[in-house]
Length: 120
Ligand SMILES: [Zn+2]
Image 1 (cartoon, helix red, strand yellow):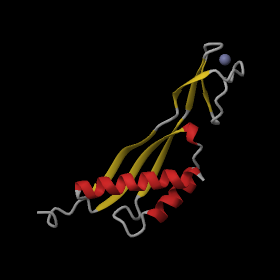
Image 2: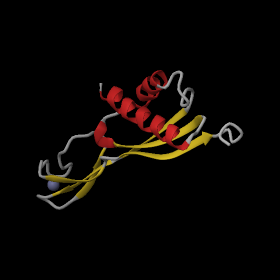
Image 3: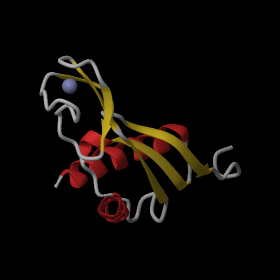
Image 4: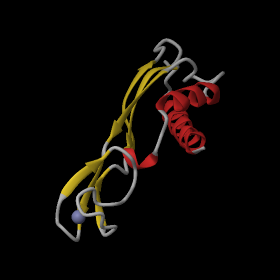
C-alpha cells in the first residue's frame, strides 16, 4: 500500500516541523498530492491518524488535494490530463509522454497552536 509509506513520510515531516518550531498542536494540514501517486485519500487519512496518535498532530484534520496528472505527448504534441495514472497519451495511445504535473507531494498549509507561556 502506497498510502502507508506516504503517510509515514508526511507524519515524520510534520512532527519534525513541529519540534523545530516548538508547536504544541497541529490542528489542520493541507497536503497536495499528484495524481500519479494513486492515493486513496480516505485510507491515507485513516493511516495518518494512527501514525500521529500520542503526538502533537493527534486528531489533526488532514485535507488532501489531488492534482491531476498532465501529460504532453511527444508523438502528437497534445497536452492532456488523465484521471488514472497511466502514462499513455489519451489521444494517440503513445507511451512517449512527458509529465507536466501530477508528481507533487507537498505540505501546502498548516494550522498550529503554540502555548507562548510554556515557551518563554
Ligand atoms: Zn499523442
